[in-house]
Image (tube, rainbow, N blue to C red; front, side):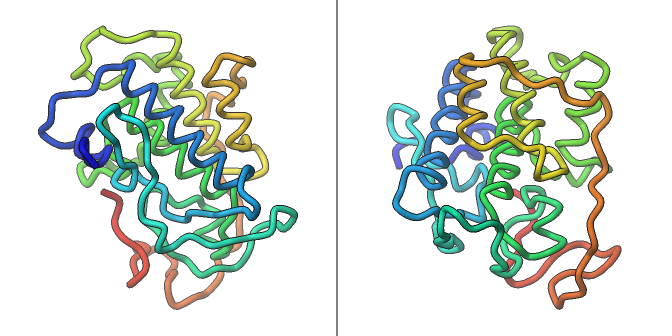
Length: 231
């Protein structure tokens, strides 16, 4: 793709993307996910939504790449046990716990990418003790979302869109899958067709039972042949 992958723009040495382009990419990625989840004859769960899999054409239109981990599911069925794969930092807590992929786990990953786009910070930063989602949620709780916007943009951004994207990102990355929006609902908010949600000022703590599997161990980093460290 002419403009490579999204991560090369927000984390690499390329010139920083303008806010207008960032917002366009966010809506484009959400639209691609809407097609996979709701508009094709079967539901496609991608299972590895991350910034390095978001490819950009010459006009910065989004092409979602790497379907090697994707799974087909019937629209009527709920989460399916597919085995734990994906990339640390983008995995929903219930997916880590159960190994069951779902539209909601894809939505969680989208939320993380949305926050990366707004902040210019990686999902997992080796120099930080907290995740990107936690970091942004703390700023949200203090009513200081604008303080975590990618500083490379200076003040050249639409404040309302920035707040909208970060709140949608947090909503999508809600620890409780039942409280996440569908990707269609997220798009409606991003298009300002409906109001954004009122989220709790403190990030909720997920409650789930961790299954004993070869890929998951209590208290240790989640790493296996199918899981990559967030990048």
